[in-house]
Amino acid sequence: MAIRRLFMMGIYLFSYYVASSQSVFGKWKTIDDRTGKPKAVIDIYEKDGLMHGKIIKILEEGKEDALCIKCDGERKDKPIIGMKIIDSLKKNTDGEWKGKTLFDPEQGMTFRCKIWLNPKNGDELKVRGYLAFLYRTQTWVRVEG
Image (cartoon, rainbow, N blue to C red; front, top):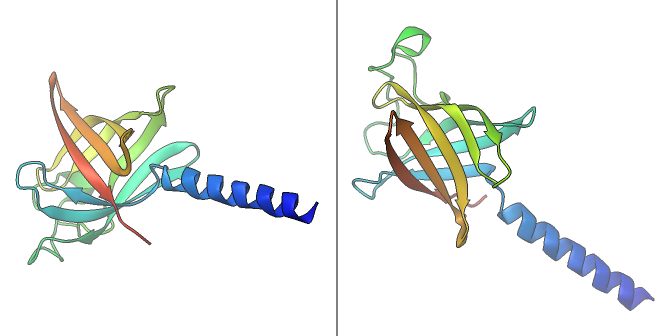
């Protein structure tokens, strides 16, 4: 009976580990789709059933203390670190998160977006921004710890 209980507990812990590693939530390193270089670390979290994300670290050398020069309104000349760039995305039945707010502080622009885990690699996040009928997709990489 004790062996069966240990076996069941092992299965439970393994499934918890697998499920937690397959979540869109956590820390993600952004990779520029044009240069292939890492740019920032984004903390993606859930609040009230919606997806949100903020910049927690800038990886580009010399830009660690950058301000949002191209931003308008309350974001104008504010630090990019700590800035919320993903706001209130909703999950659909396909496991994708969609919404109207993916903000790019480098361009000072907001895009409609879709975010989903790469089905072939749970440590890659696909982030697609839309402007009218045009779109760009980046692959972000999970940050350990």
